[in-house]
Image (cartoon, rainbow, N blue to C red; front, side, top):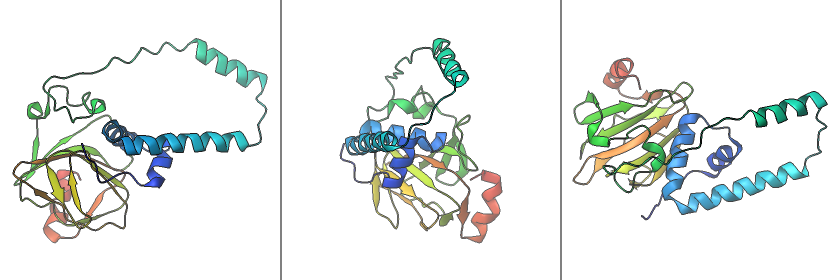
Length: 218
């Protein structure tokens, strides 16, 4: 799989530092499963963080604090992670997403947002004031023109779309901030299915889109 669009450097650093939301972490983990370039960048960011920690002046830990840490380690009963596999899922689907779509995309209970656009919202994923959802966009259908109140990550799972930034296909990750103003359109002969994480609401520019926004929860 040839991937042309990746996470920004700042996003990679935040992910390595553990400061991104659960929703952003989910998409970044999924992207890195299929993107060796971003895995290498993540490794470099982690190494850099380790070097910075080594250069910091060490702080003395109290005996009580040390005892609490050791007790927590001894009491750790975390179950081992079992690989999640699904024969019905495309081989290009990152395994981290299978927890949310274990039976395949066709078995999801999609919600119709507007003609040609369906969504499936992932519940239980922390995303600040935003959300994490799957979108299925029919060929030729455009998402209403919008900007963002915060950050947005979009990972294409199947199909492709185009916007003012470029052409995005399976595996590509769009890393957008509040300065982005775009109108994605699904291209090709099959629906574009993508997973989108936001940390705040979208800001639609059209009057009709703004009127229905509270109803569709985007």
